[in-house]
Image (cartoon, rainbow, N blue to C red; front, side):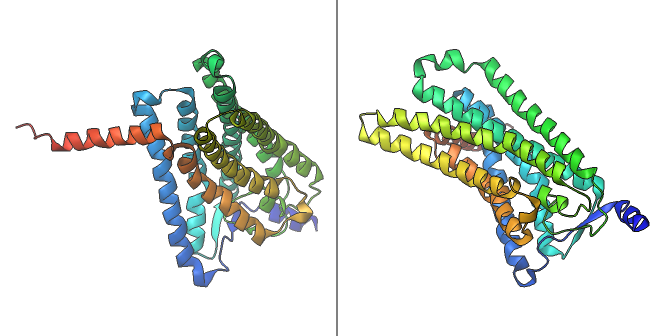
Length: 320
C-alpha cells in the first residue's frame, strides 16, 4: 500500500473533468457563458476607465468601485477561461503547481473582494448616517489603507490555506470533478485525515466570508433605519431601491460562497457545487457593474460626457 500511495502522490498533474457529462448542451452553455464573460469584462473595464478619466468621479465611493472592478476582472480571468474550455472538451490536464496557483489566486482575489465589499458598505453607512463627518472619516489615506489591508489579508490567508491543502497526499484519483481547482473538490481527493485542514478552511472562510457579511448586514441595518426617517416618499423609494440591489447581490454572492465552503467534507456534492459555483464566478460578477455603477446618475453622466467627447473628436476635420 505504501509504494502505491507514494507513486500516486508523486503524480504531477490533475485532470479537470469540468462539464464533460453535458455533451448535448456544451456548445449552448459555451456560447451563453462566453457572452456573459464578455459583458462582465466590458462592464468592469468601463467602470475602471470612466472612474480614472472623469474628474467628477474622484470620490472615495468611486475609488472603491474602481478597485472592486479591477479585482473582479482578475477574479473571473482566473477561473472562467478554464470553465469555457471545459465546455469544449471532456477533460483538461493541469499541473499540480498550476492547480495550486489557480486556487491561491481565486481565494486571494475572492477574499480581497469580500473585505472590500464590507469597506464599501461602511463607506455608504458613513455617507448616509453621518454625512457631515464623511470627509473627516473617509479620507484618502484611510481609503488606501483599507484597500491595502483587504488585498494583503486576502493573499496572506489564501497562501496559508493553499499551502495546507497541497501538503496533503493525493494517493487516489487525481480527477477533479469541477471546472477549476476549488477547495472542496481538491480536498475530497486527499487520502489522509483532513480534519485539521477542514478546520483551517472553516477558520479562513469565517474570516473572509462570515465576518464581512455580518458587517455588511450591520451597515445596511443602520442605513435602512436612517432611510426610514426620510420624510420624502420619493427619496425613501429611491434609497430603498439602491440598498435592495446592493443587498441582493451581497446575499447571492455570500450565500453561495458560504454554502460551498463552510461545511464538512462529508457534505461534498460535486454536481451541486458546480452549479452553485457558476453563480458566484459568473452571475454576481456580471451584476456588480449594473447594481453598483451603471444605474448611478453620476456614472451615466460620465459615460455621456465620455461618448460626447469621443464623437466630437471624430467630427473634427483631420489635420492636413
